[in-house]
Amino acid sequence: MSEGGTKLEAHFESMERQADAARFGMWVFLASEALLFGALFTLYACYREKWPHAFEVGVAKNDALLGTTNTLLLITSSFLVVLGIDRYRRGDALVAARLVASTAAIGLLFLLIKSHEYAMHFSEGIFPGGHGAYFADAPAGSAVFFTLYFTMTGLHAIHVTVGMGVLVYSAIQVRRRRMSLHGLEIAALYWHLVDCIWIFLWPLYYLARGS
Image (tube, rainbow, N blue to C red; front, side, top):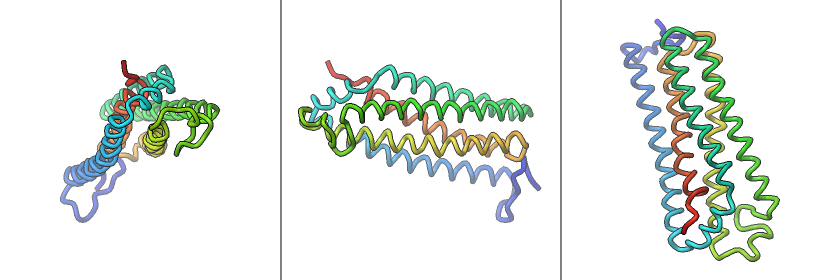
C-alpha cells in the first residue's frame, strides 16, 4: 500500500498515522532549530546592550539593499513552494515540480548575494574573530559583532544549502509522482524555517542602525 510513492511501514496502522508521525517529527526538529537560533539571538541582545555603539557601526557596514533583496527573495520562494504544494494537491505534478525547483533556484541566488557580501567584507579587512585591518581602529565590541554576524548568517547559509538539496530532490520526486503530498509539505516546512530565521536576522544585521 502506498500514497504518492510512499510505502506504509509495518509499524503504522494507516498512511494517515504515518503522515502525522512524519509531521510531528519535523516539528520537533524545527523546535530544536528554534532553540539553537534563539540562544544566538539572546547572545546578540546581551552583547548589543554591552557595546551598543559598536553594533550600530557594524550594522551600518552591512548593505541594507542587499539584505532587503535577500529578504524579498526568500519570502517569494516560500510563496512559490506553497503554490507548488497546491498544484501537486490538484494533480499537476509538472507545474508543481517546476515551482519547487524555482524555489531552490531562488535559494541559490540568495547564496550568491550572501557570498558577494562576504567578499565585500573580506576586501575591507573584516574577518570572523576580529581578524583583519578593519579592527585596528574599530570601536570596542566590533569583533564580537562581526563574529556573531558571520556565525549566524553562516549557519543560516548552511540551512539554505541543505534546504536547496531537499527541494531539488523533492522536485525530482514530485515530477515522477513518487513523493506523497505530506512529504512535500514537510520539505516546505523546513524551507519556511529558513525563511523565518532570515526575517529575524534581517533587521538585526541590516536595519538596527540606532538613532
